[in-house]
Length: 105
Image 1 (cartoon, rainbow, N blue to C red):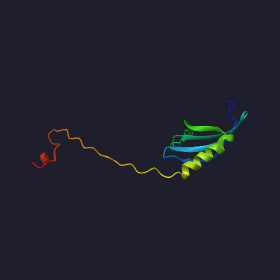
Image 2: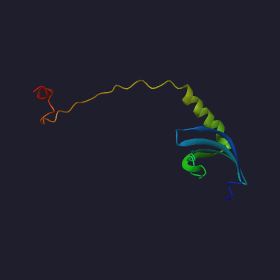
Image 3: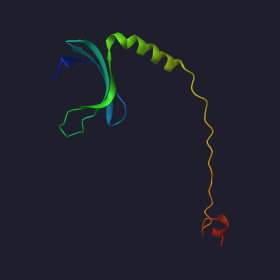
Image 4: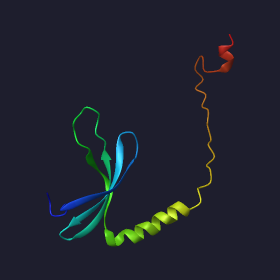
């Protein structure tokens, strides 16, 4: 156990998708307290292996959490972006069978 991971307390866990969960933990360390928000790979049924943390996540000093909260509040309250116009471009290759007229014969 390294100096940072003295004690980890699980605060919340929710599914990200069918293979991963997001865990929010408080890590009490010699040098302070941190909030660890990380993606963990789920245990596979019958595999016997424990869930494993991935590199995808964020570790912040708890003193920085009010800033993160303000940013997340802005994301939640932000209006959705306008819909984008989807343009489909059909390219005719000119080969046999690509022209709808060829299919009628």
